[in-house]
Amino acid sequence: MTASQPPKSVTLAPYSRSLLDHDGLMTPILAQEFGALSVRKTQTDQASGRFSRRSSIFQIASGGKILDAVLEISAAALPAKFLDQLLRDDVLFGQLLADFEIPVRLTDRVLYQITPSPPETRWGRRLTIYHAETHAFICSVDEVLAPDTQLWPLRLRP
Image (tube, one colour):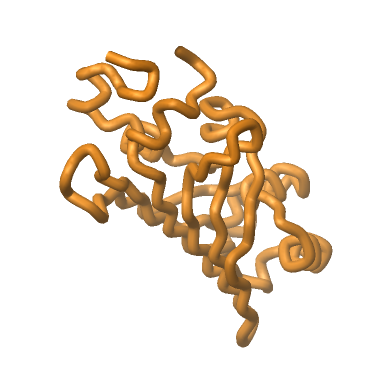
């Protein structure tokens, strides 16, 4: 076994799937596993009170891609300053929620595979985020992790 290959136990229970299997935001999980993160928006569209944002998250230390995400965001549920920063800067959505102290509740989590053949299997999850106090819809999220073969060498922990 080399440092770039997961042990057999991870192959049997995919590492990337385990990273997605929770009802919380991905930003803290990814930061814990991979350290400092950056995001690059690939597309942002605005139409009738909604924003659509496509982006990818990278590990700063290596530049390795960790996750691709598509968010459909409700403008009505978030402060104008939040939306301005989201549109202007390449910021992590989960970090921005934390910075603005917006309490969230995640529901309807579904895990799925987009490529069924190991070792290049990619796991994703879809979920909906609501404001925990007002119950307003904040966004729908579709996030897909890189394959385990790419993620494993980026981990902070041996």
